[in-house]
Amino acid sequence: MDSVSTTAPARLYSLLLKLRPAAYGTLMAFSGDLVHAAFLNWVRTKAPDVAEWLHAGNKRRLFTCSSLQFPLPAGRMREAEFKNIHLPLFTEKVYTVRITLLMGELFPLLYHTLLHFDAHSAGKNEPFMRLGKQEFHLQEVVMTDDASGWSCSQSLKDLVELARTRPLGSAASLTLEFASLTVFNRSTQQNKAYGKYFALLPLPAYIFPMLALRWRELAPPELAQLVQIEQIERYIQEDGIIISDYNLHPHHVTFTNHPQKGFVGTCTYQLRSPDADVEPDVTPLTVRQQLVLLAHFAFYSGVGYKTAMGLGQTRVLGGSSRD
Image 1 (tube, one colour):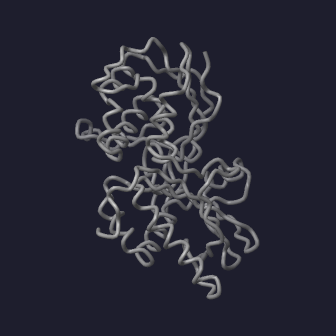
Image 2 (cartoon, rainbow, N blue to C red; image 1 turned 30 degrees about the vertical axis):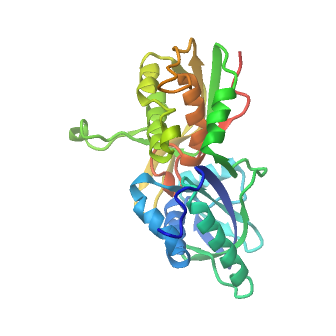
Image 3 (cartoon, rainbow, N blue to C red; image 1 turned 135 degrees about the vertical axis):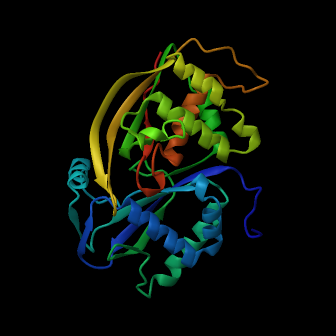
């Protein structure tokens, strides 16, 4: 595409779209697949250049979407999702959708289109997004750090520097919050005789090798090689990383056509030392630094199955590194 610079810096974006319902109504508590479809439909209509990128990158999942977030306590939302009930929509309240972009070139196109849409729809009462039978107006786009902790923008180099400079003592740890239902599709050619299988626990072997693959798909060559999948897999197999604490809860949500089991909550992983000797001709990062890098990358990429449809919203919780 001529309109997209292929030399744009490698950058990741997490945007919050603040929405208001066009009318009173109801919507199912979990709407991840509806948000995914509505976002893509809006992009195809308003930003065909972006749609071309997203279509071309379909197998690489160049973005994620959350379900529509209601202004309700987390416990109330979990209960409503679990029971698959409809929640009321009020025109005076604000609802949120989170979008992450995993290719920096997408951002200027999408941002320009959002601004253009907002400016031209203000006096026309034109809906921004339709979820089921409910229409929503775009009120605000949040792109910088906010109180929720779910919007941000960082370059891939920022994440590398964060991992490189973080002090890692002998008992360093990482705590991940799985804020939306998370599950891992473990179906492979090797086990397909047994049928589809979804893993319901966040074992290190289910998380970090897949994050490493995503990093290597998305990062430019000079940064992709900083993550060595073989080193990470060996470290996991040798129990270098173990689960040291958790507060996980079984959960399920209902897509339009099927229910899905999984879990939500937090899990703390201890990164045990000593570090193997660094091979500077391969990567300057130790394997523990690579895991820190991937944990922060998960904020944008999501973790596990159907991250483009509201599942696997993940972030690192602070204060998890100690000596």
